[in-house]
Amino acid sequence: MSVKVDSVTSEVFSAPATDRKMIPIRTIPECLKRKAAEELNEKEGTIAEELTMIKTWMKQSGHIRGRMEDQFLLGFLRSCKHSMEKVKIKLDTYYTIRSVLPEVMRKRDPLDPFVRSVIKMGVTVPLPKTVHPDDPKIILIRGDAFDGDVCDFPDILKVFTMIGDLLLRDDDQMMICGQAAIIDLGHSSSSHLFNFNLSFLRKASILNQQASPLRQKGFHFINTPKSFDLVLNIFKGLMTEKNRKRTIVSHGSSLESLHKYFPPSVLPAELGGELGPVQQYVDEWEQKLIDNRAYLIEEEGLGVDEGKRRTTNPLAEEKDLFGTAGTFRKLEID
Image (cartoon, rainbow, N blue to C red; front, side, top):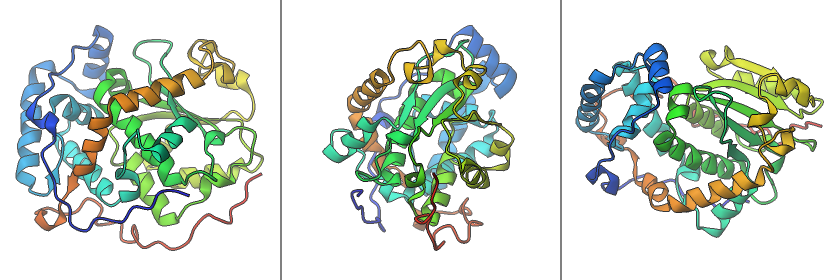
């Protein structure tokens, strides 16, 4: 079972250390500059002004306690194709939804024995290579690595967000080109993947779509169970309209089909690839999370103070978001 975390009703925010020591924006390769200009409306000459406008808006908002590093905020600009109004909505949603998910956004210490055991499962594994340097980055999600006897889905999502926080900060290719997900359900029953509350599932979908600056470019399912159509319908039902229009492919158990989209040169051995065993990337990310322990723990102090809000809550229309009854606990998938 997962570690229980009580919801915090009154939060005290302290200034992140990185707010006081600004990190300069990284120089990116020419291929990424072209893609950012052509697809994301990025103009190098206006970035500094845009970042100043965002930081001014965040300070004046009153309720948002967020990061002010230029590199971090540039990720949101790129995610929103440099639309200032969309950036404001996404940043507000990003911190608002995180503030109501204490089971995900609290106790994020990668050296905590329980959290580390979840990390070691290797459910979420960013892969290091793409065919071209301006292709979407590849994220491997291993459904059968999730041990439901050890942890619950919120614990898996916690590690997913920890990895995502570092990608947002560090990976320019990811922020400019987006990500393609390979979801490997393995050959075992996938019923444990749906052992959580519907209310939490809705929050998680907002966290990973409307709030996330990590843009999805496609979903590829491999080693799917017989009843996968039911899973896919649930999956699509939680998607935004934009993501439902993305490439969604079920490859069954066919590696040949998967390789039409992802050649062996960018895949681990478990998927017929040439990158070697996936465990090496699980180990690398475990160490990277540990190396960034202070940054991840620091995230716990960020969010929103609804008592100081002067604007409409971006989740106000989600009327049943925090009160939906029911679970998927009786869903059986062979």
